[in-house]
Image (tube, rainbow, N blue to C red; front, side, top):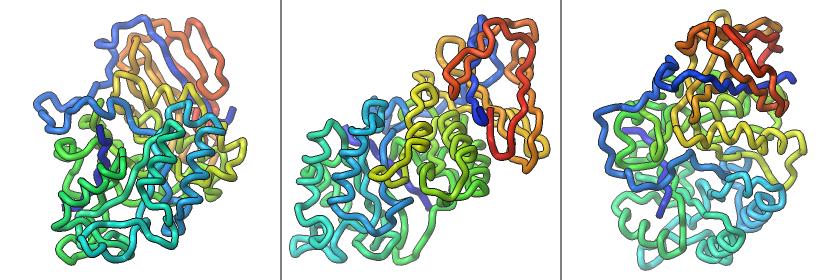
Length: 375
């Protein structure tokens, strides 16, 4: 079994929203719920995908309490917290390499001298929530701190005592064998009984090739996602410097459409205004946080020219025209792609330009899209 599960405790780029007069039941994009599923963790938590920040993509094991505290401050000062980015999540390497004399995990004294409880208090005082990393095996994936195997109860109790709000639970070194998450064992089919989100793919990296590969892998599991249970195609790379702004906007647009957890992975202490405009696009975030909770999916693909779409509440549809090729190209989304009559009138809004494109659009949308960009 290979799984990473997350638990929540008690103009070059345009994203289009189409608001139709048709009933949602007539739109040919399935809600995708698994009708016969019953999930033990249906506890009313995480009704929309979690949003926040995680330390791993940028800092790896180079984290300390100063970084985490200043990141919490940055979430507030940049306005991202007010948009829904609430979780401040420690990833691997936060603990001492061995448990204490009582068998408990403890924060690494050299990097978290105040302790994790004090860190949780600091984060909570800013209206945010603290997440932490643990592992189902003997050691975590970095091999720098103990896993929770045979210590599950004690560790859960410790996290609760510290005031931890969110757990990322990895699965390296299980029974002494080092595994990596590769989206195997079909976790989308069963992991909702144990967590509020689960990884469906291997680890992301800061390249466009990684984003496209992961988007395709995550796309196949859309019918299993919904309020309280989310497919996780891994954390955001927006702002880490390996891609163009067009590519980062595509990354953020597709993750939002797929109802992925939006966990920022860059250094927010020195984030650029251009990056903030992507991460802080309120209208795109609202797509991700839509109450219907249906994962959008790829409807059509030819020669790297793709149409992605998904239903939203109030008879709306979100549409992304994504050019994954190396040349500028025209991409068209026809009303029939959504199961609509060509004569269905629609109001079309550009969520990146924040303006209406048409108040009475019919039949299709067509746009010229730059390489690696989307509209």
